[in-house]
Structure formats: structure tokens, C-alpha cells
Image (cartoon, rainbow, N blue to C red; front, side, top):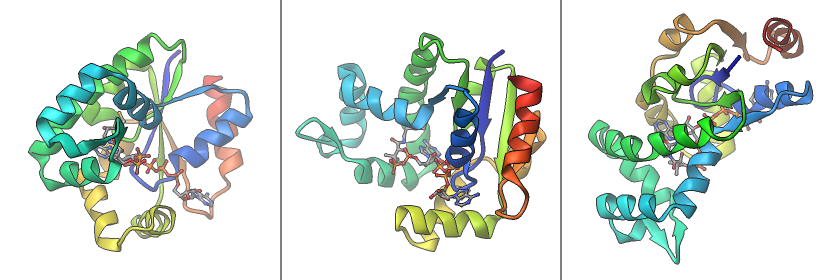
Length: 184
Ligand SMILES: CC(C)(COP(=O)(O)OP(=O)(O)OC[C@H]1O[C@@H](n2cnc3c(N)ncnc32)[C@H](O)[C@@H]1O)[C@@H](O)C(=O)NCCC(=O)NCCS
Ligand SMILES: Nc1ncnc2c1ncn2[C@@H]1O[C@H](COP(=O)(O)OP(=O)(O)OP(=O)(O)O)[C@@H](O)[C@H]1O
């Protein structure tokens, strides 16, 4: 059975994935894979350079700030980047041998079609914003911009099979054990 762990930025997906990993589940990280492929695929590098400009790579190294600001400029920009990067990541996952993936933008990327079950990690908006500000050192406005770029949390929840509430109050270990009892 193939499983995705999803949830919006700052919900704590990666944090929860570490708890699944502690229980022996190996998880493919879509964010990390995207960066690896953007760093190594000449085809992707050429496509990104053509769209964004030469400054998206410096000495062959992806300039994350340049890509991030291009992505946030408009829906059209995000769509252009996603349509280059996401098929490459999907193909890489299919051939990776992993059965579980962590993906922030599961439904908008179409990656939901690659899995049988979806686990959604959620947290209150303010908690997410505060986590992002602390982790990434960005402003509240920037954190809200990223959140606005992603599918509303309620919609992701309604389309998922399991919900893990990572509000810092409810016990995470118990919730993770419950999901494992069904899926592992
Ligand atoms: C913008 C980039 C450079 C920021 O890198 P950084 O190391 O700071 O953060 P990281 O990759 O861990 O992403 C953090 C979070 O940003 C959000 N995010 C990233 N890309 C996107 C996107 N295309 N659309 C919406 N949200 C996104 C997700 O919640 C993600 O988990 C990076 O996220 C990126 O290259 N994004 C484009 C490729 C992509 O779509 N990756 C998503 C998985 S396929
Ligand atoms: N239950 C928790 N207790 C303490 N810290 C937490 C908890 N959940 C998440 N965090 C912290 O909040 C920050 C954001 O969590 P995490 O990186 O897991 O989010 P994410 O959903 O994977 O975000 P992204 O979409 O950006 O990858 C991290 O610094 C993480 O350590």
C-alpha cells in the first residue's frame, strides 16, 4: 500500500514523519527530492534558467531565494515551475522503491494519484505561522503568503483518510500509533 503524509507549510509534516520513521517506516521526502533533481538534472536546470533567468543558478548551485521569490510572484509563475519540477519528482518517486512519501502540495501536484491512502497533518493557523517564522526566519507576511499559495487546510483534511492534529496539545505519539495500526 502506498501512503502520503501531507499538510500545509508549518503543519509539522516533517516532525510527524520522524515519528513514523522511529517506528520503522521509510519516507520519501518530495521537497528534498525536488532539490536533488534541480541540482543534478541538466534538463531541469536548462528549463528553470530559461524561465527565471541565469541567476537562478550560481556556479551550478540553485539559488533558493531567487526561485522562492519567482514562485511567490504569481499563480502563473508557480504553475510554470510546478509543471517542470513535479513530473520529474513523480517519476523519481515511482522508481525509488519507497511506498510512503511526504508531500506538502499533494493534491495540487497530482501526487495523490500515486498513493492509496493519505495522512493529513494539521495545526491551527497561528501555530503554523509562528512555526514558520521561527524555523525559516521570515516575516509573518511571507509566512501567510506561502500559506495562501497552498490548498486550504480544510479541503486537504476533507480529502484525506487520516488526520493527525499537531496543535502541540493533543498527544502525537498516540495518533501516530493509531495510523500505524491501520497502515503498517
Ligand atoms: C522554494 C524553495 C526553493 C524553498 O526551499 P526551502 O529549502 O527553503 O524549503 P523547502 O523546499 O523545504 O519547502 C518548504 C515548504 O515550502 C512550500 N513549497 C515549496 N514549493 C512549493 C510550491 N511549488 N508550491 C507551494 N508551496 C511550496 C511547502 O510547504 C514546502 O514543504 C523550494 O521549496 C522549491 O524549490 N520549490 C519548488 C519545487 C517544488 O514544488 N517542491 C515541492 C515538492 S515537489
Ligand atoms: N509538535 C511539535 N512540537 C514542537 N515543535 C514542532 C512540532 N511540530 C512541528 N514543530 C516544529 O515546527 C517547525 C515546522 O515543522 P515542520 O518542518 O515539520 O513543518 P512542515 O509541515 O514539514 O513544513 P514544510 O511544508 O515547510 O516542509 C519545525 O521547526 C518543527 O521542528
